[in-house]
Each structure stands twice: as structure tokens, then as C-alpha cells.
Length: 177
Image (cartoon, rainbow, N blue to C red; front, side):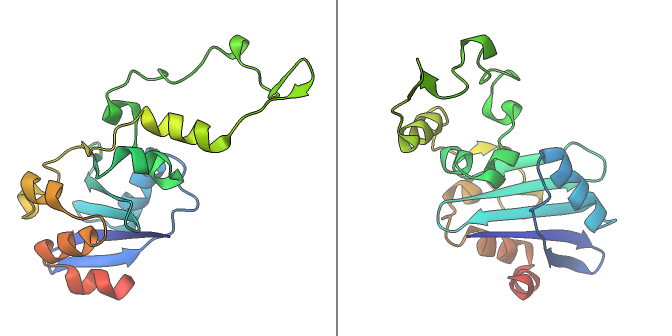
């Protein structure tokens, strides 16, 4: 189960709204959603998959979004996590994971016979290509009161609540949970 919320910093404090990510397919879509949700300078998109991983996307005005993901491998197995795990964030050149289309067996058969494949093996192989470590901007919340050390120490189960508490936004986040 996923939870996603937007926190926008205003002159009066933080405002929260839950958000649906069903129509979000790219990081650009997510960034646009954050910018549309608030005219304020700083908007945080908080995403979590219960007890598996969490992510923070920070959008400051028209600057490029800053991203932090607590567990890259867990997020890589998630459709919402894949949105956050850009090639740049993972330290890859764009297109590194693309295979030569001429060498692919696109119908999954060899000589007309169904291929014996285990989807779980395929999924675990792709997850192994990504480490179970945090990735992204570890100072994403430092100026807001959550240091790199504190961010890295967060437990996936209550990370967003802990972040919101440190920002002084726990009550507003709970209203949209």
C-alpha cells in the first residue's frame, strides 16, 4: 500500500494535501504536479510504501527537483519508485539498461516453444542491479531541520511522520493520512 502527500511551505507554516499518483508516469509529471499544487517556493512530495521504502522529492520554484530514496532496490520494484529512480540518481548513463533490440527474443519463445522463465527470478535479478542502499540528495531536508545523519537513520515504517514532526508539519500531514 502506498501513501503520497504534498507539503507546501507557506508564510503561515506547512499545508498538506494527499495526492493521487495514478496519472504520474515520469519525474517531470511529478514535478509539474507539485508545482501546480502550490504557488509556494518549497513543495515536498512524500511517498512511502509501507515498511519497504520512502522517498522525498523537493521542488523549489523552477529549480530541478531534488530526490532522496531510502532503499533503491525496494523502490525499483515499485511503479512509483521507478519514477524517482532516474539514471542520474542511480549514477548510470541514460540508456545503460536498454538492450539491443535485435538480440531480444520478444515473443518469449525459442523455436516455437514457450520459454521456461520464472518471473520472480527476473524481478530479483533486476532488483540486484540496484543496491538496497539510500540514493539521492542526503541533504535534501538539512535546511529544514532534518540532517543527513537523521535522514539516514529513519526507519521506513514511520519515516514520513518523523520528517513531518521535525518540520513542524506532523498535524497537517496526519489530517491527509
